[in-house]
Image (cartoon, rainbow, N blue to C red; front, side):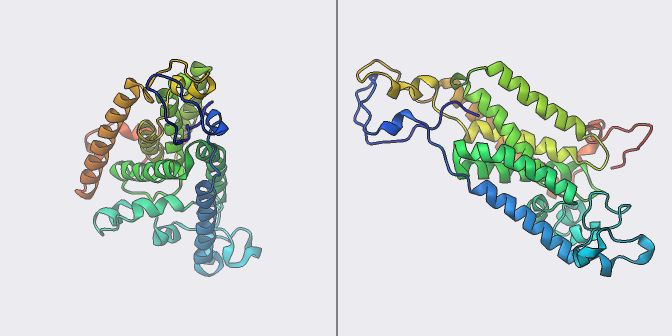
Length: 324
């Protein structure tokens, strides 16, 4: 999304406050990474879904009284009956067996690994396609700008943040999907806009557009059977991480190689407000993850401290009711 890339480092001897003479012409351009971690995540999610459907084996494991498997011609890859899974996917039992997020197993059976494994599982083809399209559209561009290390960190930690918040509020349902990680990328895009404010044109329009996209997705998250706590947890984690790992040199620093050698320029690569935002975000992240993990493994129910928070994930109407 940025209009300027990371300035590459070079062995340039320069006088303080003056524009150095560039050794290489690429100093004027921006660094564009070749994406590979996002394609790896893409392939990994699809591979895990194929393995999940193989293990599910609907024709063998589903009694006739439960209904007919969908797309029976696929053999053991056939989908569960629609009344069991309308998203064209495996059974809840298979998802649980392979690592779905289940509060009881995380807290009382010490299976904390489910906080990470659940983000690679998907409830069905519809769920998988929606998430993978989002991953490609959002993740590829971000990785081109910031590289695999930073985007990989945002993706994985945001997924973990979404799982932790889900476990604190949801006890009686399983949860799967990469939605928390994907919302983390959206959150990182927003904080990247704010912390790198000086290098953007049409700033307000960009922020408003991104906020609109996030708001629409969060509103859709209050529909039944959608875990909006994973969305919120992932978004907040990614938003804070964006201030920490996506900070970029300000406009004056990045433009110095486009000026005549010897011209006066700023010697500060980052502005004070960028450092302040990074420090605050890092502190909140550390406190948030520490407190969340402590509450989770202590068996705390966040609903006891917030009686209205369940409405963030589901709002009851005349057509459906919400249960925890």
